[in-house]
Image (tube, rainbow, N blue to C red; front, side, top):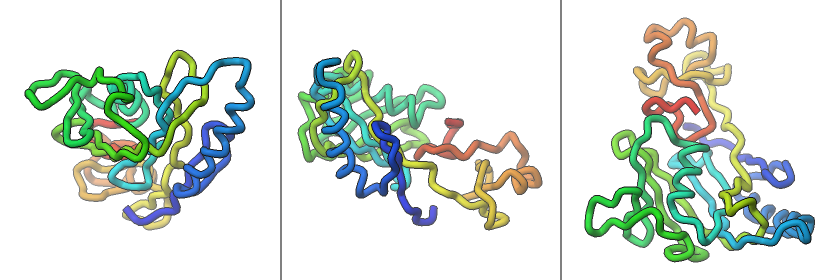
Length: 217
């Protein structure tokens, strides 16, 4: 994928920023939002996480309660970015793997609270599907004290869909991916004339799992 200008939208105020500027913006925007909610709901301590796909065009900023188990973060990542066929997944934190069903002695349960294994400044990793694997990198960039209903994971910001041009006509935005052809990103017109047939297509979606397995967004 060609290098793109990495723009995202803040979920709190709706403003758009570049990837590097979003963390700085959220630190200021969070203060404004916290003041606005005082007296309505008490703050819940959480971690501010940045999540990136292998293609750096795909990224999220999340607030996750420190008392929440890793399984709650796993469920959110599946819901917003990954779930297609109920594949297995795992976190790797400090060289230790955490899964929903630990099968090896060195693995630990994903019901472990985040606050027990994470701290500000730490980087850790996540895998979904151990065959056609989607790999994510996560960084704890700070704490987040904005009130959240029932300790839910909160989406703070997300990348806008990166502009991907059709690999055939080189002019129109891609809408489909042919899974039978290497790097076959097709616009609607080129897809209609493509020899492989619609059964081989997956939609272009705003996710690092785009074009993988049966993921359709």
